[in-house]
Length: 103
Image 1: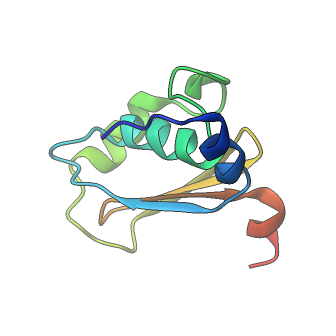
Image 2: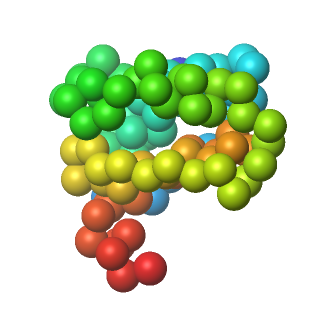
Image 3: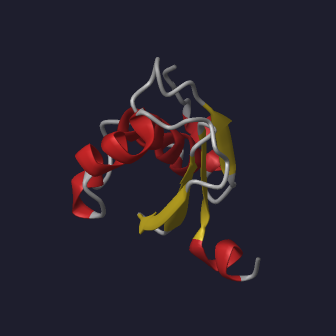
C-alpha cells in the first residue's frame, strides 16, 4: 500500500485521524506505521522525522509480526504530534495528540 498526495489532499489529510487494517504476514508492522503516519500527516512516507526517533521499529516487528490476531495486544507511542496505536489484529491508527487525550 502506498500513498501519493497532491497539495490539496495533503492539506485535507493534516490533523485527521487515520486507521488502517493490515495483514502482519504481508506488511511489516513498522512499514504499516510509516504508511499510516504519512496518511495522517499528508506527507510521503520518506518525508518527516524518521520512525526510529520515537520507537524501535525492529521491536514493533517482533511484537506484532507474529501476532495471533488478538485485538487486546496493543502498543501506543507518540510521533510527529500523533498518538500511534498498533493492535494484534493488524490495526494501526494515528490521531492528533490533542484528540487522543480527550478520548
